Image (cartoon, rainbow, N blue to C red; front, side):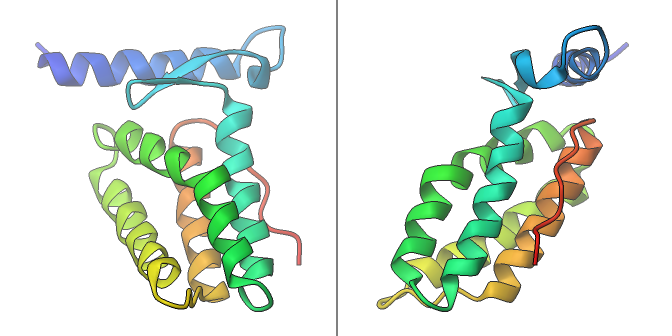
Length: 140
């Protein structure tokens, strides 16, 4: 017998997997991840936001900060919550990488590391993969 939290996690994962199948593209559907209703496209866009922030990090740290918080931050939390019941280690890795980038962005002046943003995107995309969602890597 599954505990209530495990049942909710299994149901959420089933919704994600169901969204990946069927006639209409998965990006058009709303799924529940970590208790939030989102579209897979929104979660994929967060990865693109990390890529954009990485590019901006060396020339415009304020733009990198704005992009991170506007496009990626909430999705990182959502995916971490969604990973918690299925892969705690990956959820922790995602939160640690996010925390490192946040600390760099909150420094005065902001000092984001392109390498840390890239590492965060890598672990984020791995997390999406565990939730049956695919996001392309950053284009160099």
